[in-house]
Picture (cartoon, rainbow, N blue to C red):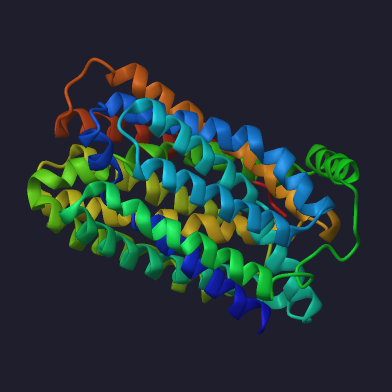
Length: 389
């Protein structure tokens, strides 16, 4: 199977299982007795575990095998899903979330590194951004379908939303084992220590890569939308109605993927569009917080998701253009290690801000306004120091 096609199949299966939890993740945790503040604290722990696991897993992906790293990620996700299936309170949820965090760290960096070097072996370096954008479209479609399926499952039992992830994790393990061995391994093999040294050295020398990591930190404000959109829209549409709200919101991610795929600018020259993506993301979040009606809030949320859908493939193309084969996964993990700091800081600040506040739409709207303003303000500062080449 061609590398790009293999990558799309792998992404579709893996994302579908996770997406089945997306629409009712927060309502499920609320049903366990957690507050909105505790959900933010749980999310902060998830990102802290994922970030602390980034460098070791990235080094193993370059030094040992990227395919091995992807298989281990599938194993950890399955364990986390099993834990959540039997969770009864904050403690088991915290352990399950930690396993999922380690699993996501095994994926981080290794996925992008695998497809980049697999395309190089096929002589298709020029298709890199096209593949990243197509992957974003595939992921968006899988997320929409998974979210719809998850909302239907939750009508019977909210805890059953973890069953699809228990099924898809062995499936991604099989796809990796069958079709992803060797194809996307480093062109020039390095040891784990060599890959880490090369990654740190490159980051010290490259102003552009430091800039894109700062952009990732700013984008951490999106956490405010991730887990609060469903309790915010649920009073408007009910549990089943969250399925079509989810479809409308995430359809915007697919549209942005089509747009990025058709861009004619040179690979590695995406900085202006990365800033535009941040502005769309932040403005959408702010307007959703200010709005008082369903359709105005929903329109703002669609703008927010359009920006988010642009951001990831643009960043992947921007970074992979600048990193050599031997340490792609390690640099990807170093990038995530630093860039995802915002995903830890934001939910911690949210928890501190609303830990004594009621679980209401007004509380969520207030947090969205603050988070959106942070993203827009950060984009304005980044525009002042944008790399010119």
